[in-house]
Length: 409
Figure 1 (cartoon, one colour):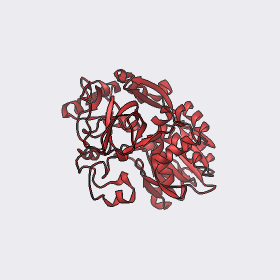
Figure 2: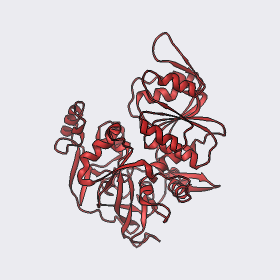
Figure 3: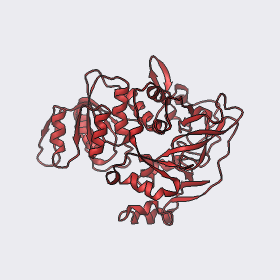
């Protein structure tokens, strides 16, 4: 089968790191970059508790682009195995199963929670985080009978969504009801990231919430808040017109466009805050949002998240920030802010009981509380990966949001 893999090689890394500054397409030129498009054997079941999945859609995530653009912190490399097949946003059908895979059946339409925690790694005594259901915080990301990897799509043994087939442990597999179509299924993974962040940081009734970023995660934060019937005011800061339209569609009350010369004053007005002028440097904001969801991960977005947060407010970082210079942390201590990170999905309190985040996402879509399919703007066969990646990386050019591969088209 054909697969798109990332394989670290120092010479390729250095060459593409330098040349990519002048031509971004270098990063998906398989002759010089760390990306490889090649024939690979289909993955085999590690043991009887695993299934093999035929991929219908494999999404391109912002974290995948960070990987290809060589923006990841070197710290992440400790938790992967090279080479690995990319892709952790996965909807497909079970093509094969082990005898221990329980009630899962061949042909079942499924989505995959890609986190490789204790259960998937065959660790008999789960770590404290996994015992609590906090699988994203598993202490054994490099242990067990599966090679190191945070998740499917960053592990040599499992394959990933940017290929025709992958394997997953039964604990990672969620069947889709008929009410959830494949397009919505392809968005369950990023929607679960948003749900996890919102459910762990619930806005209060009447609070003002600021969502920074109009990409898929930012829009999913808005959609999650509204799907959960949380009565709060949502203000969104987005870059492009098509993002603004979808932010409004999913329930944002007020939207500010990221225009260099005007957005600070406009956003301050929307948040009923004041923009103060220091002796020099960026404006200082007095007042702001009770909760800020930062969904971009750049120097500007982090600085905006910190300064547009109200006194005693909370900033939730989802934007995959790595090593970021030039962030002014003054408001963290001055305004006694609570700054939290949010990574992937886990187990949530929902309707009075504990449920996996993926189960919550599936339930909300099944009950028509949200329709995520408008977020998928482009579909490509795997062979057309250069155009797919260019489209995903240049969002404004093609009004792109979620770009997906169809490996078995």
